[in-house]
Structure formats: structure tokens, C-alpha cells
Image 1 (cartoon, rainbow, N blue to C red):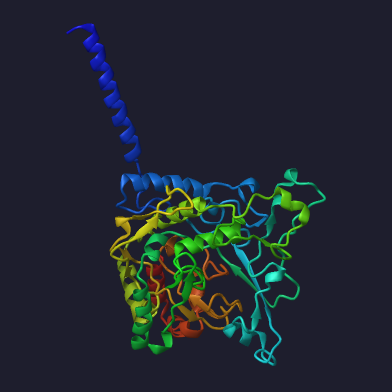
Image 2: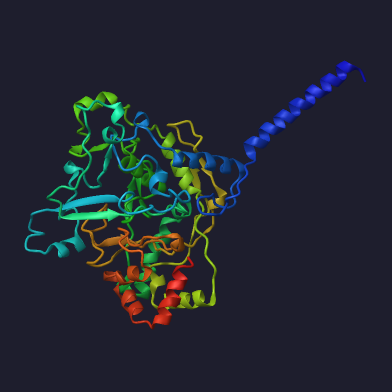
Length: 447
């Protein structure tokens, strides 16, 4: 064999190896955290895993004012309120710094005159409560680009942060919830959530919740909502777009304008020249953040002991499972917006790992009236001041704060706070012998 042929063969081999390495690096992804908190769901292809890890990096990315952060905001990244310092997607590390404050003011009209504040709070709707949109409401942003980045702006030009108005009648803290398993929740068919209401009417009419139909501006139709403390968001994409806008001040084609503390988009004129063009995101960021959350693994159950099994029976006996439904199922076909789509054109891709999968979230995704103790007086997109979505219980063993405002770290206290349609279950729990209470709590802590 002559030297020229050897060199030619070696060169050809190098090309083959190079192509093989390129394909390997593109389609093979090491994923040691599959199925664990903060990691991807099981069953993803190598391409889907690659995209998940790329979008998870964006979930942790701290945005700058030049990228659209602000002018008012609560956090610089999704991770700041959903995970830090733990796994990506976890609950807020505390209530004060990672929660959101919502405000409302009682309208003076025939519907409210002569009624006590507590009575108004339970049934508050947009006819009885003003969301204070021109005083920073309904959700306040407590940081500004001029307060957090003083070196970037002149002292004479400051953006006022959102503060609670003196005339606010209702002030509601919202704890930042975990976002694990959100893709599975998003993939539950609408009709299955609707069915939960009819089934509850048959089992116990007093416990029957109702679905929230929310408008999807992209699909130009309504969908049964399942995200947000009051079921205010119809799908994961809208949930993410709202969070980008309210929590980070990032505008999109869905939420095109940032809020100011003095009203809707009424910032000091001097700051306008420093702000990037609106909307800040052409859909690229929104698509990637949605993709990441959609593929975050749901929480796995803890050890199932004899005590846990006894508690599970009590959970059903007390009719807790009528609203906290143990299991639902995703649709036969599930599509996500491809995070690699050339924005603003969105391409949908089928994700088989989300299809026909159990959703063991322990929720009916309906809203229920939970009584005076939990009523916050803040109406949202059809849910009144005393109504709340049935909180999913999966991952409860990883949570520190309970109830929408994180007011307690005591799981038993959280149960006893259930009023309104939840009072039957909380009263029954309160009457249990201490040993049975411990069994039920052991079951909940296994979720």
C-alpha cells in the first residue's frame, strides 16, 4: 500500500469520525437527573433532552434592563422565585421576598353598601372590588431598574416602586408555588376537568367546584383553566407570559406593556430613552421558558408505609379525594411549541413522553369557595374573592409553606383553615383521634 493511499484513507476516516462525533453530540445527552426534582420527565428523546437543558439554563438566567427587565419587577429570573437555592421549579424560598402582593379596593355602590368587609371579601367580584389598576394593581412590583441598577441611570430620573396604597381594602400575599409537572397538567383534556364537576355533584353536591373558562388570545378561543391560584390562566404559555410581565417586567406579544406604580405604562418621561423596544421578547424567550416548565419532572412519591396506607384510606373516607382527585390522565396527543422555532413563527412538535400519562397531582383543577378565613377579596378572571383552585398536593413532602399566602408551615393547621366547601373535611379531620390524624398527615407527607 503506497503512502498516498494511506493518507487518503486516514483522511477519510477522520471525516467519518468527525461526522459521527457531531451527530453524537447533537443527539446524545447525558441526563443523570431524569425523573428527579428539577430534572426532565422520563421518556424524552435525545433532541428533547438537549432542548430541555438549554431552556433550563434560561430559566436560571438573570435578565438585565437592556434585555427588557423592568422598569418594575419582582425578580431577575424565574429561578429566583421558583427554586433558588433548591432545584429548578421549586417553591419560593420564603414569602416576603419571593411572593406577590395583590391589592383591591371596595367599590362604593348598592352592592357593597351596608355590608361588612369580611362578607364582601367572600363573594367579591369586579362589580364590588376595584383592582386599583391606576395605583399599581392588581399585582405590585416592588423593585425598579433605578433602585436595583443605580449606576445605569441619572439620580434625577427614578422609577417609583409599587407600594400598597393607603386606601386598599384587600391586601393578599401570593406565595410562589412549585412548577413541577406542569406539562402533564397542561396536557389534561378540558372535558376531563369539566367531568370532575359533574362527578362531584353526584358524590356530594356541597363539594362541587366549577371550571374556569379563560380566553386564549393565541388560539382565539376559550379553554378550561388550570394554572394560577384562582385558575386565572388557560394554559402554560399564558401562565408564563403573565409571569414574565408581572414578575420580571418582560413584555411579549401577549402582554405588550409594562405596568408603572402610578398607572398603566406611565413612567417618567426621562426614563423612556433608556428602555428597549416593546415588546421585549418576540416569542423566543416565552417559548423556551414554557418548554422548560412543560418538561420538568413531577414529584415522586416518598416511602409508602403501613401508616401511609392507613392515612390514604382516611383521606378517601373524609371525602378529601372528592376534590383532591388522586389521578387524571393526559391526552392522546400532546404538542409543544418548539423552542428552536424561528420566532415569531411558532412550530409545534409532538412530545410523546407527555401522551397518555397519569397525572397524580391530587387536584380537580376546579375552583371552590373556601370560606371567610381564606377569602382574600381579590377577584380574578371569574373566580371571586373567596374562591381558589384546588391546590395540587403532589410534592407536598418537599414544601415548607402552605395556603396561598404561605401563612403556615404546619400541615394540620392548613387543613383546619379549610372553610366554606372545605369545612366538612376539616371538621371531620378535627374530630379524628390523634393517632388517625398522624396517619392522615403521614399519607400527605408521602406525596
